[in-house]
Image (cartoon, rainbow, N blue to C red):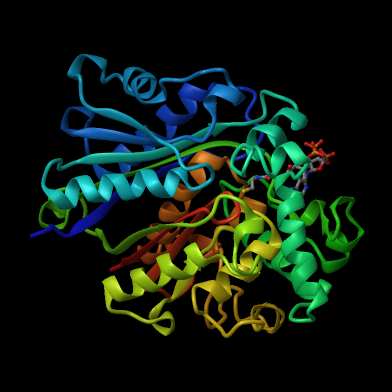
Length: 387
Ligand code: COA
């Protein structure tokens, strides 16, 4: 019999270009915030899972699990510390490993975190490191970058007229509006559709403001068995579903490049696990690495019919106060995308919303969802949280 699991503490660094701090200190800062929020001491932690995509490329550091435990002051306790990697889904997957460990009864108080320090190398190196999440032999070596791959999806959707350029831009406008209300966000300025349409072209039709940025940052959460959660907090947030799905690594091998079947499957399984439907979800953090990715996610997860996400966005249904607020944190677009940390930040955002602690971006919510994608959809991790 599996145990119910709860999130009892959350912590995030601010996201952005953080020259003043190091890779290891980023994680320690987020971890300390999460422990303080949970009222848990280092002595009580049974293990740590760290989501990290590519410290080897970004800061030339491997063996990240042990490094983090050491700099968290836990080396002499010799607890398990495990790095988890699934490209940009590393954070979501680290959270899932922590949930599985606690649900199984093997571990009790577990920290799941994510960290990436991407700005110590120049953009070319980052873009190439990120391209390692695609198929190196058949995509990246042929010149496909991540913006390039998502641009192909956007081109197909604009071509079949299920989306307009303005609707795509509105995703970024909405996420910047939300980011302006999030103290940890990398970009805190509101923008207009013209800002997006006049920004420089990155990979046609995607422009600068269609892209998530290169970001330094870390996030951490503490999970515990639900039966013990109230020893630590008055406001535990329950994990109602945890799912993961995989798909072909290369975009060109999909049955339809505009549908991320791993999102469809992970979403379907999560709704079945929680015995809920899309209409029961009060807010969702989706993986908007590019504006087109948010459009796909909304449809893949079943929040509207195929071809309807652009209109939904244009009508304001995904905005704060809409029927289904999407990316209240500002999403990857405005909050920033330190790739290994993003999935954990999504859990932090939904938890803060469910606890009523989201300040100027607060929505009315009892059940929230997170959706974290690796590559162009070769890994997808979905969680449903509730109070
Ligand atoms: N949105 C809005 N503004 C951005 C931005 C973004 N995504 N990225 C950078 N900027 C701004 C910077 O703040 C800077 O502004 P300033 O001149 O006022 O200081 C300016 O644009 C230039 O920044 P710079 O860092 O030189 O940008 P760049 O050209 O090196 O990088 C991209 C821009 C789009 C190439 C880069 O952000 C990128 O590759 N993004 C995609 C990341 C990705 O693929 N992630 C994984 C997805 S799964």
